[in-house]
Image 1: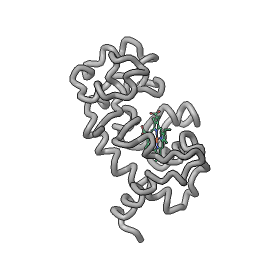
Image 2: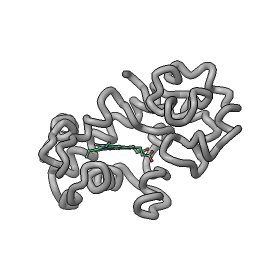
Image 3: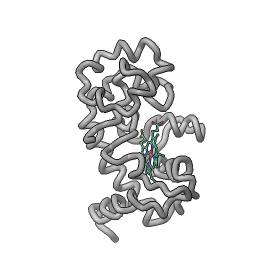
Image 4: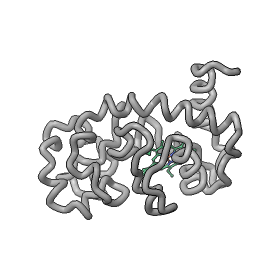
Length: 165
Ligand code: HEC
């Protein structure tokens, strides 16, 4: 039985493995430096993730399901076998970084848009005024680096997708 730490380490390696995908991408192509996560990632699993709802109709998803979803959607690959070491390792790695992301993005969790059923950018469009009114936006140290800012409008410091980058 591999130790938890060994599984996390294997997961971290697989996170950078382009051979998992059919399109040359690895997880890290999008998620380097904690990029491209939204406010939902500040919440413990299971929780609602817009991509899971939009693409698979899932009301909530757990860490393992999220790995599978990113295998299928952005990596354009088959899901990993449910009993596989690869799935267990990627899940262990996601479970390791989720609390780190949450700790680094305290404003995302407090964002009034986070809980709403908005689009991929934490929803600036759909939330409209609500995002602009985010009391955390000004205090959010991530806002300036937010990769969603261009797409959603700089007023919305909501996406919470910058963490350590
Ligand atoms: C092409 C870009 C891309 C790639 C490659 C990618 N993802 Fe994602 N991932 C996203 C996007 C976009 C989101 C945000 C989805 C949302 O919030 O609706 C996301 C969200 C996530 C989340 C957080 C969901 C949450 O809020 O709880 C996890 C965990 C995740 N991805 C894991 C992975 C893993 C593991 C891989 C590799 C197997 C991977 N991703 C590959 C684009 C990508």
